[in-house]
Length: 239
Image (cartoon, rainbow, N blue to C red; front, top):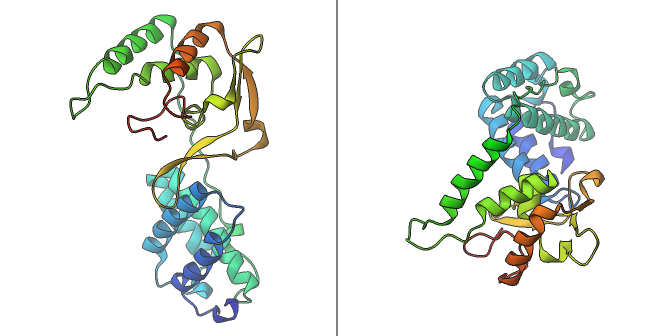
């Protein structure tokens, strides 16, 4: 269908063609596809009706930087999507070069990081333990996962999505010392539901870690009362 795209086609038409190609790409994770679809909506809110021939580096640069002033993260993803779209236009013969290549990349902001002290961690754990001991909005007892999840963060340094994706098969309690393998992540699929995604963003994300002694008794206790494969399931058994 690439021959339908010309220099006079709108970015709306280009986006529609590229979206079909993107969603059919089995190398992209569902979470990535969802992020690209959301970014596509952002792009079309700002550039709907613009013809491909009018999408000059200057115009696209102004648009990307305008988005970056409000939401740098959204601007970075929008630039990636625009780059893919305009590459599609190049392959279709509508333009000779990708104008996004000439735009300035969005520089990520450096967050201000403050290390927690031991007293801070104890206070946070006490608050989370009190939360776990309470009831939800339906007056049902909570499943006691929040404090334990925090302990797992401290034990592994893993990302939130990696910790929530942990399954009992990822642990080897018989090893000396006990080990855990991080080889999954939780991501929202195209249907909007959270699910465990087997592949991680980089090969370095697949790693085996020793479990520090302080976290092992908690994990064993959770394993004894586990009702599904997830170590930290939601109240309804989902990631």
